[in-house]
Length: 210
Image (tube, rainbow, N blue to C red):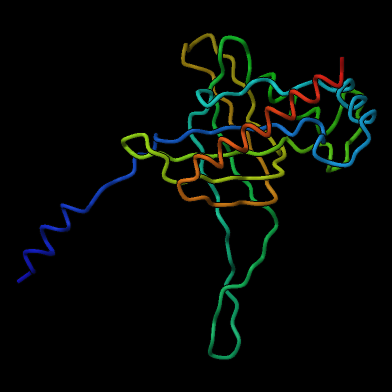
């Protein structure tokens, strides 16, 4: 016969995490401002491309799957163990287009960070998008944890569908790559700080242009 206390505690302590309690933030890398690239080179690159990143907000995101570190199994004799084999993270985010065409413009902006209109392929330190942060919240909207992906870059997007026979919202899935993933437990202050750094970079860069 099962322990009544264990049985009652099961229902007392059990809770679930809803899949829709999250927020995605993209913090742009403003044309290598955090790097040692010469300012004039940065400005030239910006002039040849689409300019500052279109403003992608959390409400544009429909869903995504957050990858974490993976290991492969290796063995030696009678023993087996996990081995680290990292080739970068890859993840897709499903976006919903708005009436301003923000996501279509964002895809074009991402592509032009890799290859410009003249067909020139740009080096790694100039094609990075920035950071992508996923914050996860409880039922009471309290931050639980966050995923931070750094040095993110564009890989591909699904073809954009235009259809007279349907009036559903337009959706675009964009696949990104990332060089690193950091997991933070209940770090709202850290997220605020990272967003502040991104906005400060944008402000400094714009002030230098004028």
